[in-house]
Length: 84
Picture 1 (spheres, rainbow, N blue to C red):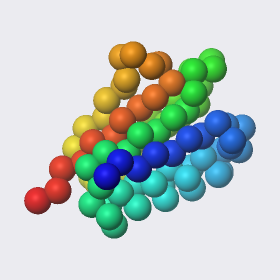
Picture 2 (picture 1 turned 30 degrees about the vertical axis):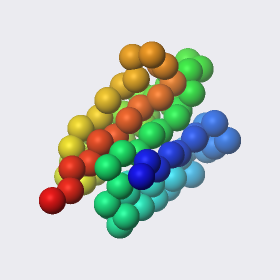
Picture 3 (picture 1 turned 180 degrees about the vertical axis):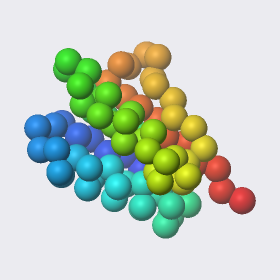
Picture 4 (picture 1 turned 60 degrees about the vertical axis):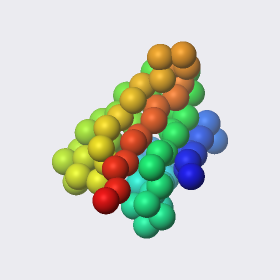
């Protein structure tokens, strides 16, 4: 199972971006999903930086195993989880 979050629709609404990111991480934890795909889009790169800053927060980092930036598609980030 892979969860997906596309941020194209809310790219300019900061508080909603934060809520959407938190919700997808919470859903992954709840469903024990191994992978979350976050699509900030290509654009100027600011939204991707914001996503990576969010994922780098200590309280969020505790939930996932690693983050992978898609080398084939700049506008995509994968968050990998490891469940026991």
